[in-house]
Length: 391
Ligand SMILES: NC(=O)c1ccc[n+]([C@@H]2O[C@H](COP(=O)([O-])OP(=O)(O)OC[C@H]3O[C@@H](n4cnc5c(N)ncnc54)[C@H](O)[C@@H]3O)[C@@H](O)[C@H]2O)c1
Image 1 (spheres, rainbow, N blue to C red):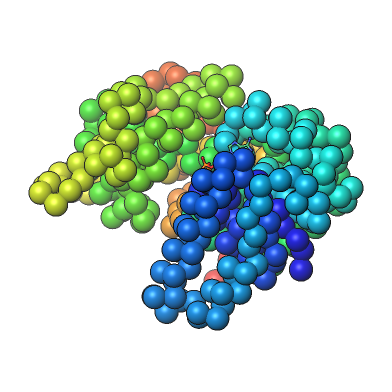
Image 2 (image 1 turned 90 degrees about the vertical axis):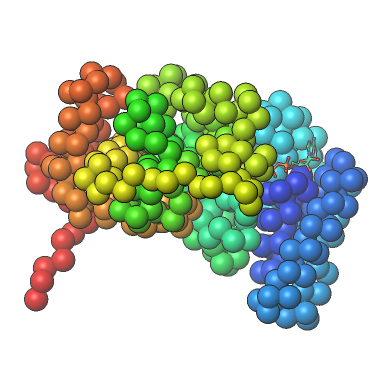
């Protein structure tokens, strides 16, 4: 029964507080802004009320979850915490300031974490007096529903801390994966081609938005098409993540953002939240009709999936995460129909390499360079997982 502290009562802070309180942990949630604290409290009550209405939560349990959460407006109040998770604005300077001001109030053995999506954990740990106690605990939005949590030690993090934190987060009903402190960690890095390659296919005029989404859902088995998903996430948010990763990887062309998405963000066509993105939303709007050509659809899926597998292979090659954790991250974090390595084995590594080499031959762009790991595996006829032998 750990005393948990959450800094920032916004979208993520509220979600993480709900998760920890549901797992019977007492939670202290802090925000600089009293209105944010009150709004957060009302939101948590509303979410739990809805769960009760749907019969997914007992009234009794709702009351105990709510009783587990206390809203505080001083760092002093966080003194009893065993684990503090920072979930304030994604701004390195603000996080640096808050870490420096808060840390002196924490117990010497309190674990200190950030929920940052894109900042270096090592950089944030460097703001601490005791950097060995600091690491990344990256929840996905909405935190109560998304089963995946990425755990990211900085280079200063004490080795044994990872296991301690995994135990806590798993006891909250989450799957944890371990990631090296690299831009985008696992999910936000490996998923880039899902959006980027779909945009490239669209930008070249090979297929329209509705056709690409149709192919990825009907043939690829993804729950949402790339354009539907970008509209759902918000084109401003999705574009900003892509641009951050592109810059963080020193302008590697693999991650280059698309002008199409930039223009949508500039126009305020952010997706569902503004009623217009790649699609238009509303009751009087006819959905665009996809061209259901199976041959073309298969080519679209093969191209995007090959690029996803290539990204996953490079993530493994650079020791950012293990095979199992990358597959778990993509199936639990973004609901991919299969782990990308399991999928690569199914397609055949040689065929994946061939698909990427064909793109390279066509464009001669470094964006389409095949991962050295994938090529080596194809040459030595290896798979990612041991093959089942039929009885
Ligand atoms: N929203 C997502 O989809 C998502 C997903 C995963 C991780 N994250 C990360 O979680 C963090 C929070 O994101 P969010 O979407 O919840 O943001 P948000 O804007 O919804 O909430 C941020 C909260 O922090 C508070 N705050 C700002 N400055 C503060 C300060 N100096 N001291 C205390 N509180 C302060 C604000 O009042 C606000 O309530 C970011 O680091 C973000 O990258 C976000």
